[in-house]
Image 1 (cartoon, rainbow, N blue to C red):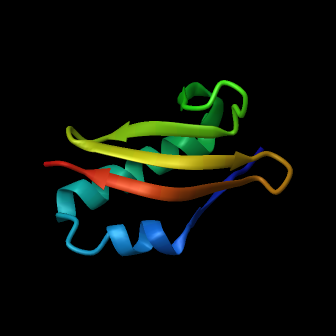
Image 2: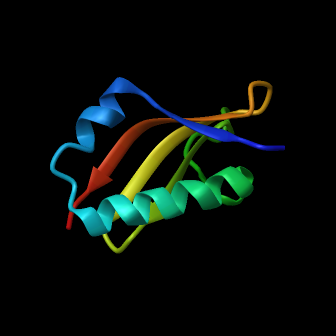
Length: 81
C-alpha cells in the first residue's frame, strides 16, 4: 500500500510555532508511518485504526489509519520541547 498523509485543521493549527527541528522530525516520522502504519502505538483497543507515533524527543502525533483510502489522517500534534 502507498499511504498519504492528511492533516486535520486542528493539527495544522498546532503546527504554528513548531520549531524547525520538531517539524523536520514530524515529517520524517510521518514518512515512516506511511510505510508501516500498523507498527505504531494503538490508543483505542476497540478501534485499532486510532494510533500514535513519537517524533523527535518531545513530540507525539495522533492519527487515524484509513486502509481503504490509503490515508493517514493526523488529528493531533503535541510538542512539549
